[in-house]
Every structure is written in C-alpha cells, then in structure tokens.
Image (cartoon, rainbow, N blue to C red):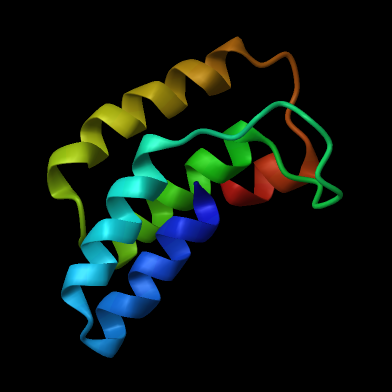
Length: 89
C-alpha cells in the first residue's frame, strides 16, 4: 500500500496523472499483511504515512477523513506503539 501511494505522489509530481491515479487507487485498496518484512513497519505505521502523504500532497480528499478515523481506531486498539509507529504519527 505505502509504496504504491509513494509512487502515485511521484508520478503526480512528474505530470503523469493517469498512472498516478492508477497507483493511488491500487495503493489505497490494499493493506499490509501482518508479517515480518524486515522493514520494521506495521499496518499502523503505513496507514499513518499514507495519510500524511495524502494531506501533504492534497490528494484523495474524499478518502482522508475515513482513513483518519480508521487510523484513530487502530491507535486506540494498540497496547503500545513501536518507534516506527510513534514517529509516523
């Protein structure tokens, strides 16, 4: 999810709107599996960074509130936050 949203932002900045839209749609549709990927990441971290990218680049306005509330629920359900998660929030 996160890499596709990062790709969408890069494509948008390069002026390739059609491919940016495809990457963004794909990135927002998939989630992160809860398994070790050797990147110290988590679903919570990725969702926080995705929301930051959406806000900073003013894209997917219609999805931001929904994602913010989902992120808040995920934070509330967490017993603790990793360093990566804390820094992402």
